[in-house]
Length: 62
Image (cartoon, rainbow, N blue to C red; front, side, top):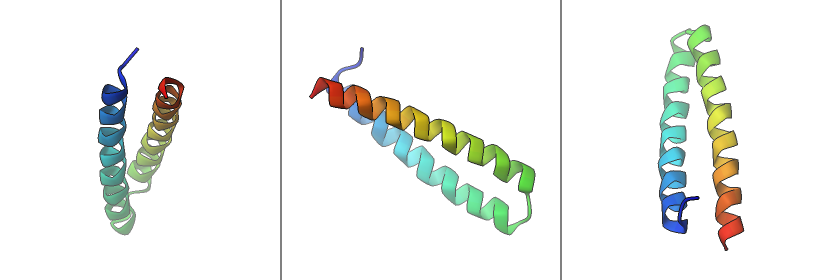
């Protein structure tokens, strides 16, 4: 089990990756790359699941 600070750090890093991927997705959409957009959407969904899991772990520590 991670410490509270480790969880917070991982959450912050994942959020940054999420934001960057959203920006990349917008570029892919505007340039007409539907397959890559679908892959990015799947990655975003996995990130959302991981964020939910990490936030739950953080809440359990509080």
